[in-house]
Image 1 (cartoon, rainbow, N blue to C red):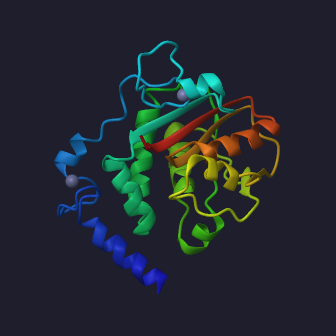
Image 2 (image 1 turned 90 degrees about the horizontal axis):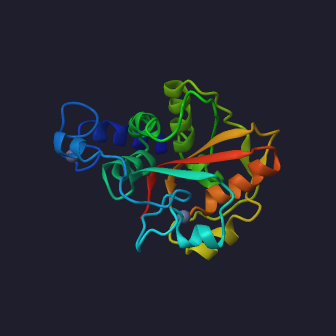
Length: 233
Ligand SMILES: [Zn+2]
Ligand SMILES: [Zn+2]
């Protein structure tokens, strides 16, 4: 039954804009939405990539100054409230891997403005929550990681992280609940490469990538950069 709905949804969405549902004769975004596909800009924290609310003193936000996160830097490429966020939701909840592949291609272009892709990093996806993985035909983070690896010519280690415990889905949780929910959630299946580009689809409070980064650092990683396709502001 799930497979039937999956096919239905991917056929349905393939003729509608991934953001505004305008009818299209091709797969992707309509022209106005395509014009809104700008990566995030403006003054942001150079560690967690949060938009600055107040005046910029250091280029780190108050939270990162108070309690430096375990990762080196977050690249929150697109706004979750924009067309890329819409495409991710359609991909994940409409069971449409093509939408996620399209997001990944946009990420491959946007990340090249932010990191030196000639210095190789190993791409590692955040593994899906086990319950979601069982329900879905594909893992969104794995689709993005795989596509990035091809586009950027960087190695992919898709099994380095695994989910250890049955954490609850995070949507709707507060920051503190998220971080408690994820205690001990990941484990490394082997030694981590020194430089890692850790890939997640959506960055909300950072609890997931912080938890995963700590595990990678205990396993040998020295430089962990986070690539989040969409950033919730
Ligand atoms: Zn549109
Ligand atoms: Zn910050």
